[in-house]
Length: 337
Ligand code: DAH
Image (cartoon, rainbow, N blue to C red; front, top):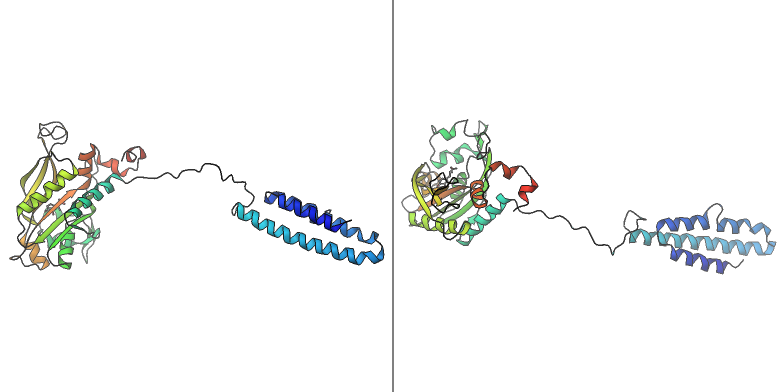
């Protein structure tokens, strides 16, 4: 029997093995109990005595060559098809595209608002959702008897120190002004919390963007110009805006800002309650008492502030009639943005 011929045959067989399974079949064929090597070994006693030693050595050499070839082949086959081993993968098949999500409409509006104000030189700042009672109320000139401080209107967490879930983004005014000297121009997006019963226009959690600017010689007309640029950028350039006198403890004078109805363009329809106007935010000139709380010189500096509800802006912009839709995770709704 020509061992060299056998070895050539084995090498050809092994190099043709296309999978780990085929390789295993070859291993059994050559090295199994009834395999070729076993057969060769058991034929030794039948040989002439002087030939046995040589032939035995050749069989042993063949066996170790075979073992190392199988080992190598095994490594290359496993590497080809990944850890799973003998899975046949057709790398020419088209892949399965990953499904990409899209930006949540609330996140989208927040990004848009922050971009518009960034273009006017405002910085974007965030504050914590768990706030001190001082930052949420006292620092903003909201007196201790004010109804918004009531436990029916604010989620209180701890008594000492008094902590709560912020009911608006305005406390970041106090934080920012205590941390930085004027001039200061900041917008603050974030979540706020109020214990309201849930219906089509109320949730216990929603989003606001706060904005404020402090410097020397800041006037109400600066507020008007800033908000006009903002409103025209978010909605459309033909939008009209009006200021209605209002009261907020942290601004004086204060106003609520309306835009002309996006649907009837001011003529009056069911969306605007026949008024032709839609309220979109609160604003005013920062109250001197707030400057006193944060240690700003009230004779030297003036400033304006404003705050808006994001869900409301998104509802007006996209014509959505129920605030709950934003947080139900219904893909039929979310995929439209
Ligand atoms: N913090 C007010 C709210 O949640 C909104 C607001 C009104 C913010 C007037 C302001 C402002 O900065 O000047 O209802």
